[in-house]
Length: 565
Image (cartoon, rainbow, N blue to C red):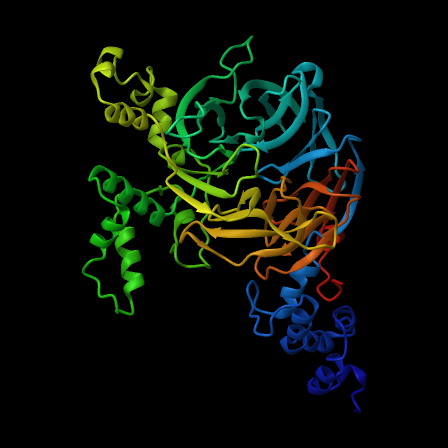
């Protein structure tokens, strides 16, 4: 002990520090370098990490190589500190979204207005526009930035109850926003989505007769230009793309597009199409594919995956300019797939993802997947004539001579069906894609009454791996009604969702709650900065407030590795 307190043996220091909490332990590291080095020992931080975030005892490192860095990720770098509380619309806000580059975010309100803000500290308002008088809107429901952040899609409801989408061009450097075009959207709650930097998807619904044996309705999906080709008119050029048959009573909702299409899903879809041509079943085609594989073989699962992948070996989505962004094994959970938006991917296939239900009055409970071929979209956009698929297939005289079965086959040939349907057996409130678009996050609520709040139900964020088409571990801890629309958001290492009592923030890797977002009542939506997740914006449905949450690391703007509590 002649060396004094500053040179205590490491074993003794670890014993003393093991009685401290995280905040005290972090501050003890400021004494000197020896205490700092000992205070970052894994034997001290692992028990604290597991205890404070209520994790299983067998939890392993998932992001960094040290437990102290994992603790910083959830405490010091997470957007859980309220930095700004802005009073906005007394009628309440409906949605918030970030631009792809993380520089801007947009809020929409129930008074048919939207505002564009800078994602800085402090936040600055760069544009505000009320659409009630100019476009005769009643409410603004939803907003989405284009992939290059140069356009903004705003979806809303007009005074007559019909839906409409308005497109605005954005010059972030000059802080200028200009109206570009408008297009009808039916039903109004579908929202629309971006296909690329210059075109969007919108829908129309055409109901059938109640006694129809085919289905209940058809959702016609249009691909529309974001900018109007006419200098005076504000209309958009529409090209029909898909006629999705709604066989139940519901319709396509919460539509979104992914640039990532799994090779395995593509192979299964290809086999299903071959089975239809051969008038057989998908099960029979699968049995034919794996017929010579020993059922007791240990590597049977790997052999089946390999043969499925070989069906689409001719398809290559990569390019020379960005091939490094697409390297990796689809079965590797640690592989990172960057879905870049360069021009060489304009004709790449997309995966259309939407929610569907059993009727138009009940919440959707299933997720539909449909592969959209890039060549098909290009043909619809740039061909001089309409696609043959949407042309009149038979003359009236020919139809009169054909049998009912032939007529039914002719009608069905003009319609599209989802390539795959995932029944979640729960009410879907919102869907979102991860940054690499490899995972689909679905916010759902169940009918199991909790009783803590009146008419509140336990909600869940389910995660679907689009590579293997399997479910990952879910996120729990928030509440919602069966009819709520609560979109979730993913950014950096964090996942967030609105809730009836505010909002929640989870660790994306550990799936534990790391923050609660307080609002006077329910939050309508939350949005995380897509780049690093260090900024989070939540909007209130009843209090009409915009709350901006940031990390302590972002607020300090300096690195203090031993004082992050």
